[in-house]
Amino acid sequence: MTHPLNSLGFAKPPSETRVVVAMSGGVDSSVVAAQLAEEGYDVVGVTLQLYDHGAALAKQGACCAGRDIHDARRVAEGMGFPHYVLDYENVFRDAVIDEFADSYLSGATPVPCIRCNERVKFRDLLETAKDLDADCMATGHYIQRKVGPSGPELHSAADPARDQSYFLFSTTPEQLSYLRFPLGHLPNKDATRAMAAKYGLAVADKPDSQDICFVPDGNYASVIEKLRPGAADPGDIVDMTGAVLGTHRGVIHYTIGQRRGLGIGGLADPLYVVRLDPDKRQVVVGPKEALSTRIVPVREINWLGDGAFDGKDEWPVSVKVRSTRPPRPALIRPTGPATAEVELLTPEEGVSPGQACVFYDSDSTRVLGGGWIWRGY
Image (tube, rainbow, N blue to C red; front, side):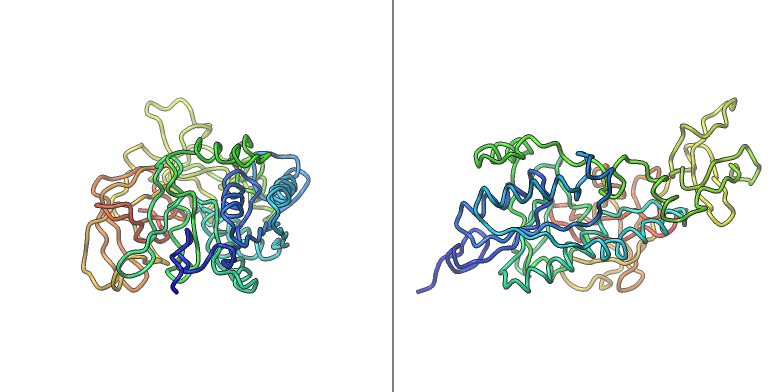
């Protein structure tokens, strides 16, 4: 007799289905673990210790700190499933923090949370889940996994305000077949907190994490200075012709599109940071229109659409060039198996190397993949 598919898509009872839940200690992953445990699944909770120091231990707005490990353990104890803490600090430093520092020093604006998902959570932790003989791994991310004609597809979350597809574009088809995202269909975060209250979780009212876990006070520059001594060497602020307008206190203190804090007042029109040149230790400024970008070169593309990525000359999609912006109409022109030129039909300001460019189907919620913006124009 064939057993009907359970809620995770397996043809067997929940009690015979082992699922590893990646638990950050926050309300989202805690709800996922509690829900699956209540449904009768063989749940194993795993929390990664990625980065820890005195400031992080006392900071509630960052993930991965000691408090969060304690909160995850309490949820597991309350719901009656095993919980493990894995020390991934060395892996995290090698795979995420070092590249973050080097990328910042090269004048880019990195997104370390994407690299963490790609290189730690969905690679190393996923392999650990398989070593534990789990049928799948579940996370608290707000994104949807749907099974289409060609297999599992990635779709943006039902709630646009919570959607995390920008941070998960590099999830591979193989990983997607093993991953589950039980919260992606929920209408809003209030629904998640209501579920946490229903399960009696102490984290039901816990604030969302706001900061990158290894930048617990939001001060990127101070972290870079500690990782790369000498990174904050001063230099010149120049206009687009190379004329010196002033001095700066280190390229790492500036970002593309920045207007405030340049220290070059007295000018008729406001100036914005349009380019960073770490080799010359220059911050290049110009008028707002100089920030407009229409052509965006993208590399390291992870393709989640149907067929070969470079099998087309050009096709319309929607793209996000920053996590906080809605998808905008664009054209993709492949230039190789994992590289492309993306043309924004309406120019965008502040497109920065180091950010992701994520592709969406214009006619549905499907995420088609994405890549990394690698130089500005």
